[in-house]
Length: 598
Image (cartoon, rainbow, N blue to C red; front, top):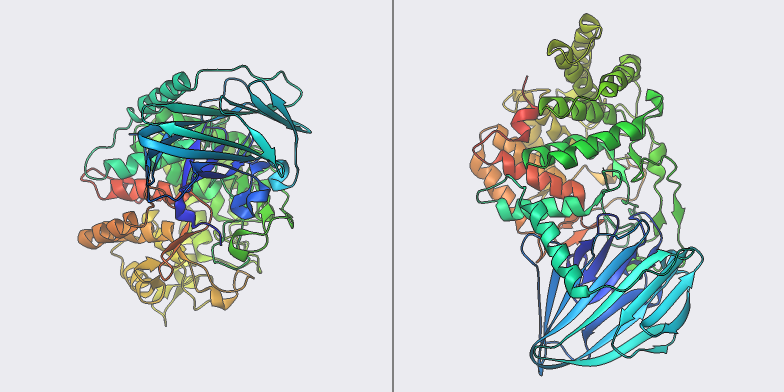
């Protein structure tokens, strides 16, 4: 059995990340970038596919862990019969391009604790055994372009292509381990003091957290989500990935397993709001600039996702040597959905540029030219069917949410002209805005069901329709919105959480079954807040906060029956939604009210 997803914590260096199990095992890490090959891949296979364990040798009575306040420095405390020891895990910011440092410091708290480290390095997602050599500082490992230096004073042995070290830690003592990944054609990085790096890493995170403008009762939850969002940012470019993992399933045992180590445009407006409203203007600016570079080119070639540097070719492959997370096959790298046409991304991009101007980010003269090009395409392109926000692998359809987001693109462009941010055919775009709005209200609303439906001609509901009031298409108290929310409450809520849509219809071309979608549940809370149902919004928000793991992290989905997190982890979209909903519940105007304004 795989370890439950909620057993993991995240550490990272703003270029890549690692997942640390409660057992003391690091089961996932890609080097040198988020989307590079993993050198630890036991998360999706077995220990033979790579991991790094630091834990007590005998039985463990209790495990307690936490992040040091407002940092990404993780402390895991192991209590045994003979004593207590703490493992401190962190990743310093890279000293040079292509270098990744992961440091683990073991501290004796009480008594004596026999400890063990097991290091199994497997490059290429657990496929390649490297050439390992003993060094005076520990070991080195090399295979093709990848090299690792492993430094420690603990004596090391080798068995079955695994490096092992055993030691006893006593009260007041400490032992450190430093793993450094670097390009094999470059000189080996030098040594450094782990304690100094720990102090510098802690200070860097605390300085960053100190810029947060969010206060009040949700401050700690918001801060942890913002730190997570920062950790999922590829600093050299400003791109923000959806999650640091691939192929963690949306349904245990099923095929809904995707690679999320890329940057999605559908998240862009929510992300910008979360950053700006929390005081992180630099990150918001970097995200906008990444967005403009990524989508530069012909408007009809705009993709739904890109690599961390704006790469377009995200070819999907399957890795048959990995046994998968709880028999949820296959393991995929790359994502074929990058070839899909999704109409909603045009609305997301233009709304993102609109929000950037609204919050007075520095003017970018190329932004309006790009926006005008996108609008030229949308004037006819909005009528095309697409794969929709959920990236269905079935036939293209006229998804209602996609048409709503096309309306958003036109609406924001009209507002920009009226506010003097750009020039354009105002009368023509006003007419287009009215045409799309009329089309959605006539063809996307089913009179018999008294609700907006998933796509034109459908009878099915879809949680993406909760976006209708959040983007200002209709007010939250419009009778059509009220009745749609009521229908979603009746048919898409499972044990208090929102499902995306009824998967048994086959609309997505996949076998049925998945967990509740956490961002959609946050959207429902936002709808409640806009409609004045404040207590219901607060209750639902608290229910969602209760689903976080012990260190405050959330995945994309949750199975209320199994009480387990599902999908890639931790998920940026979920944490962005948490930040925005928290602000929507505060006295000051939140993102939902801002975005829905006319």
